[in-house]
Image: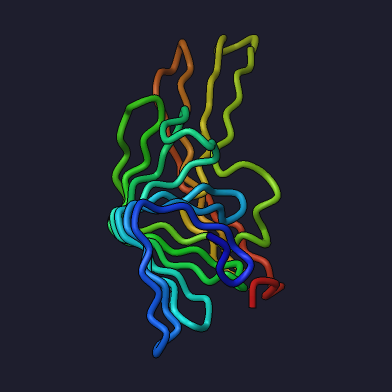
Length: 168
């Protein structure tokens, strides 16, 4: 089904002619760069979409290497802002719980999850993971985890602020 320039697939579809809203049950759509699958999707006449019991990932299959489970997901078909509430990020079946997840997709030029494996002469093997936990029009918040053979585990919170409001 194509509605407001976006393709939706669902088991059951209800269109309300009076309010020009679309209801989908057990539906799926693509909102760059995510595939959004949900138990219930509601798209209003202005293109705002809210999903209940949603799962987001970057793969067409339901389970990729990583998956974002959320109680509610909100995005607009003509907007670049995606918001999630009641979030759990599952990376290789390891859950990481977050209260919310917001991302400005215009800034989304690279992956939200980046990893690096390096060798240092003094500390040996070093692996790190950097996760984009929050993105607003001019602020990004990253969570970083590191493991070093001689020093063991470490973590950090990083921020990136710009004066450009490119998502508005």
